[in-house]
Image 1 (cartoon, rainbow, N blue to C red):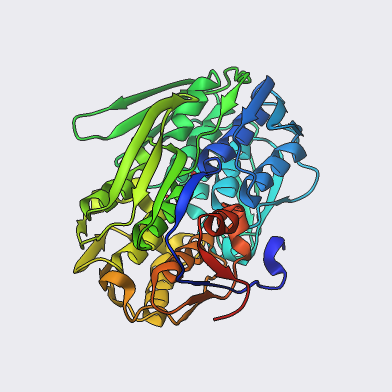
Image 2: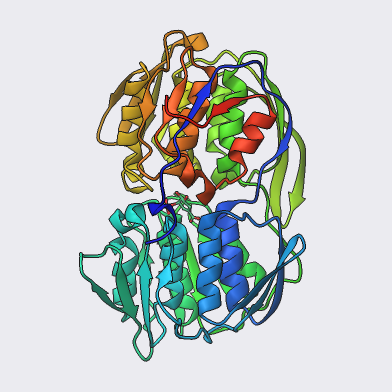
Amino acid sequence: MTGHASTPRPLTSRRAGALQGRVRVPGDKSISHRAFLFGGLASGRTRVTGLLEGEDVLATGRAMRQMGARIEREGEAWVIDGVGNGALLEPDGVLDFGNAGTGSRLTMGLVGPYDFTTTFVGDASLSRRPMGRVLDPLREMGVQVLARSRDRLPLSIRGPRVAAPIEYRVPMASAQVKSAVLLAGLNTPGTTTVIEPVMTRDHTEKMLEGFGASVSVETDGAGVRTIRLTGQSELKGVADFVVPGDPSSAAFLVVAALLVPGSDVVIENALMNPTRTGLVETLREMGASIEILNPRLSGGEDVADLHVRHSALKGVTVPPERAPSMIDEYPVLAVAAAFAEGETRMQGLEELRVKESDRLAAVAAGLLANGVTHEEGEDWLTVTGRPDGRGLGGGRVETHLDHRIAMSFLVMGLASEKPVGIDDAAMIATSFPEFEGLVTGLGGLLEEQAA
Ligand code: S3P
């Protein structure tokens, strides 16, 4: 339906010299989606700099335009004139989210309570992903859902005349579900309450507060968070919103620098919000040399530069409770583990099964194709590494339309003895269009051909 029905673009990475230099990672994907959503909803003007111009985020911008927001790029900034809370227009056609789970699920929450019909479509990957996790709480608020295949795209939703506020305990660790319910609360009278037993990325709560929403967060002794949002209040544009760099994109460059012998790289402007730093913590436990330089505040968030040097890694056990703070980083952690001495055990991975691909299966298949000893369980993965990458590589990896599978295995090929091929690099543009340019700029070798 969109994007990458086009011809796949196979790509191969191979071992070359050390990676060296300074790079700046593009804007955070989660925050960029929310900048378009909240800027497009708030009254008045929002000016955003540092926005990620990946396909996923641009799809969210297009959707907000279709519902009445004015969004223009002016030089380095994106200027958004929002419609005002409660004033979205019925979209002029279907909303096509391509590959974007976050954009589609958050927008379902946002428009759920509106008394008009909105139709969501996406690519083959998005059309396989479960939407019930967002639609179930919306149904409790009075939203009707019409889908040919149960709770999968393409589907249409229609809100009631007046939505009912709910108290919702999020049944899985998902920032998308938490966010969808809170966004639905924006156009619902009264107080919408979300209970989050396990903390996930908190960008929605923080940014809504910045846009003037009435939102409060209470955390009890066991770490359970109760988030309350008062609906139908005014949201106001933010004059100067700065998007920090994406730690989930930085992750690929961090691991590449750790694995390629002799490397010395500085990765600038990485978001250091504690709900996103699980990978850095884990890699440091594995013996990685990652120095956190120049910690500072940018757009209300902690950011820093990461100085990464090639390091001998050793296997560790990653505790399941760390999963929410590194959920998108397990594929590249598995690649790092393939080069570590001993065994790395990753647990609590059930959510990986419902990402852009079944990431646990895709990672295991990629490891198998490249000679890495591993074991896959229902919600866990164990990888036994070979320091220096001896004997590793030589396989061709199926990416299943998943950008993070593509980038993870390209990183593997930069350090393994034999090259690593992926069947399609096109999806990388959904989250990190600059990836190939940055890798080759640091000295990595990528070739446009199958392995
Ligand atoms: C995101 C939440 C996470 C993450 C995704 C972005 C967000 O998904 O994997 O890349 O911006 O809220 P889940 O909520 O499904 O864990």
